[in-house]
Length: 286
Image 1: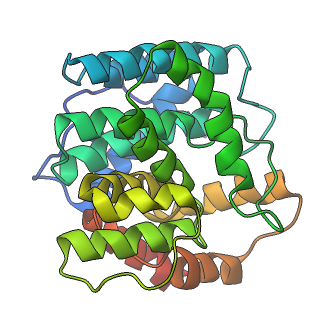
Image 2 (image 1 turned 180 degrees about the vertical axis):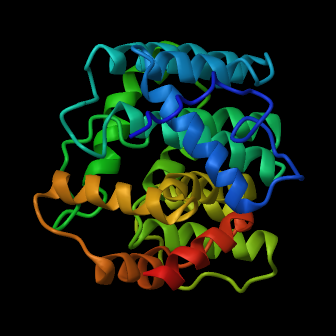
């Protein structure tokens, strides 16, 4: 029996740090997974991952304020405040993987620098304080918990109220049954010539989508970054993520659960269509 070769040091010239047009989606998935394994060995992984990605953003006032607030949150997460490494899925590694995926989606979809700064912060806090439960019977319970915990950090840096509204809408849009469809509907309206979304907004925070196209774009980018690890990389990684979630929920999850997620819940990538071949491969193998 031969020992597996260790992953090389973090490669900042490969995905998820850059978009490499010479790589296929499957090869990009391999680069993502190697990066995730490297980051998982960092003792202060949330702080180090956040600092690395934040340093790739511009130094304007808004980005600097979000960087400062994010650094304090990341440090607290590494101390076990608002994060719980006993959870098999929603732990510090998940925060890092979503931040890394969000960085790539921001590059891939051509988000502006300000949008990327907001997206990174939203990725950091989207599951802040997650307790391992679900939203069953209480829509947006976990997302509002995350926003409530993040609010004092934003207040401390006097973040602009307009940015705070976009961040809140993005985090709430990671709720996949109601939030993501609404964000996608507004994204289609603004950027894909879709029709006007029908009906009232399910939460007041989503009213910003009608006024600010960037808010819908950031929200969709975050929700898709949240899903890349589960349905955008390799089948093996998708299975690993599902197994972690099954342990966290204390019940078995099988192929029918994965098909339900793929077909009826998540559905498709819009901003991150680059990963569609990987998603289809997972769907066809399930």
